[in-house]
Length: 354
Ligand SMILES: Nc1nc2c(ncn2[C@@H]2O[C@H](COP(=O)(O)OP(=O)(O)OP(=O)(O)O)[C@@H](O)[C@H]2O)c(=O)[nH]1
Ligand SMILES: [Mg+2]
Image 1 (cartoon, rainbow, N blue to C red):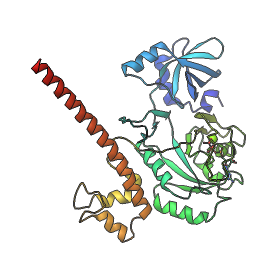
Image 2: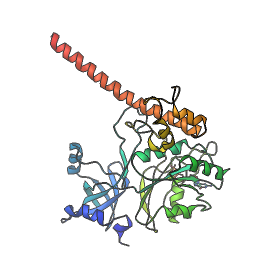
Image 3: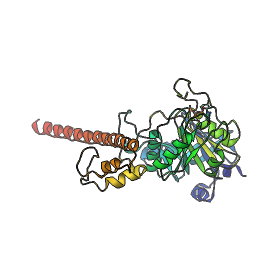
Image 4: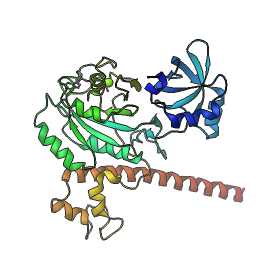
């Protein structure tokens, strides 16, 4: 297979690149981000590339964005295996960083972290983390970026009551495939492979120690990504993977390894935690009050459905937490606007009185 095709190059990219098809410009895909330098895969081999002055200028003007892993870029090569990124080709999809409450700032949208992703595998280490809340948060985030997901319950070989947990996950996330796997015994790995067809870019997400790099290695049948043991005491990972990296597997699939995410926040602008909670939102639409908080109001269909067992209690509680966080961010934006208005009023008053 031609080298670019191994990284997912196809006719649609060729068309997007055609305006740049002049001398000395080549296409390449970003495989790893460093501080200022990026690794990129080109037809000629791996390149170390940096952002050109003209791209920086376009970013400042707000007409382009800085590249991220997975982006197809226009490169001006120079020297041996070096080059500069002149442009980023339009993206098929973008995965954004969650806006967490802890960072204290509100952004309209989180920063882009990966581009041109076809599917996300969300890994939950069920030997240590039997709560499905983390999965719910990941799914909510991916949903806002319209990236399809598969939930993978890892370490099935050393976890207990795995079938029950898988059944509970299927029940809770009806629209998402749920797989039980073990990378050490290869249980369920064939099922994962069916979700990683030739030319597709699949990002692997999950907490540190969930087994992201191990899964990539077993899919690749090679030690591509470094792994290390979790802490025995609490199953916490050691943040072994430190940068996002795209691997082209022999099978033709592209797997993107990521560092473990500590906190999974939500979007800053969404009204409710969206369709991951589709059951809850369906009931919520029928509440007597349109701004029902589903906690104490009369005529609340959500609490009625909860009482009658149509909604899972844990999912309901998680929904309230995510809703509150989202509203918390909106409140911050609102307060900032009010403050700006106050400042404008004071300035106006000062101008009038001096
Ligand atoms: N028994 C068992 N152990 C696993 C499985 N997957 C991963 N492990 C072990 O869990 C530990 C952590 O795995 P990693 O693949 O490094 O985890 P990671 O998600 O890449 O972690 P970070 O890079 O820190 O984000 C290693 O000791 C693996 O051998 C599995 O399916 N079964
Ligand atoms: Mg890792």
